[in-house]
Image (tube, rainbow, N blue to C red; front, side, top):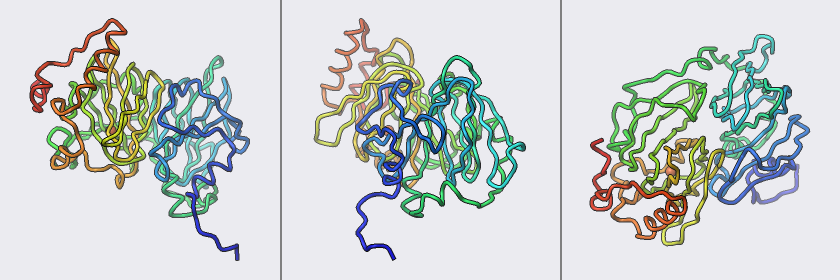
Length: 369
Ligand SMILES: [Fe+2]
């Protein structure tokens, strides 16, 4: 029997620290393409962990690199893994535990693709370009999972043979209409549209967007539900020289910027905001119940991809009855919000195109458009 002790750390954190890789903490990573990685002998690649304030115990973010022309050793993982291609082009092979690698599904991808590898499958990443490295962002619920099964081997060396994933989920995301869920505009339950599949080729060019007028700035969003998985995400696009309403929700949500230029503010109610500057390949996390607000300083639409934590952690900001508590309408925000935005735009020779009506009434100025 082992020595008695009280637990003080998450099992996942102990495992992460034992890998002896760089761990990025704080509120944001300015550019995932250039941050320093360390050697991860066990996986045969360079990698780093990202555990920003608000992710602890909920979601894992990890960056790995595949050198030009190389294929990394395959690995298995018992939980679903979402992967965003930060840069580069390559291919993934996927096969269930216990099957032969030569029967693997293969699909190719390039910059800003998003895909999901089902749990209990092997995955093998290859860089198909000879001249530039591939960088991948991996997102999982391992911290939560390891709190439930506190044995890392269960997740990385598990003989369970799952039902194999169907090849079709890696090739054609489908638009589903009439699904039951919370509507973004009204906050009420009803029919919603979302994309369903495991492979989305280019999140910077995705144009099949729904409207999310309730959050202001003429925003458009697409919801993505991965096939046979509890994992989901959404991408929002909002206009040049505008900003969205502040809102708050639960922890563990990782935000990635496929393209655009701007900043976000993060703050705990009653405290001064923390400013996160962003551009392509930035990553940040709004901590649990901290308000956050996104500002587009560019002359083009900006977009962000929000990787969702498990549903238990979504918070309540999407429900109409909680919106007053968890979303700040433009007329109710502090004057400094608008002033900072206009000042930052002026530094770039740009001016805000926020309609004056937005500040006069909490009825959305874009709602009719
Ligand atoms: Fe948010």
